Image (cartoon, rainbow, N blue to C red; front, side):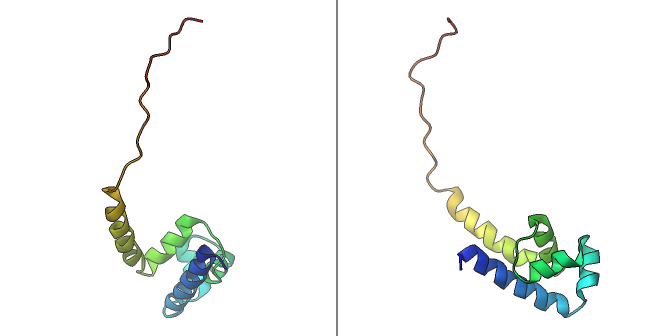
Length: 96
């Protein structure tokens, strides 16, 4: 199994667990503005629209945990080496 597939599977289990504590799939789908089939696929770790996935995490109060990790990771790489750009040695004329 690929790392991304494993991550989606674990994320789906987390969403299912948190969602089931307070509502059924139909209510959750209604609050998200999607269909029950989308919630089912999300909880099974199958790919869904990223905005729907992030909205689900936000609705369940889980998104802030992921944004903290993302912010920390970005802070580590933001000050790292930058891609060097090639300088043009000469201007190209428009004389054809």
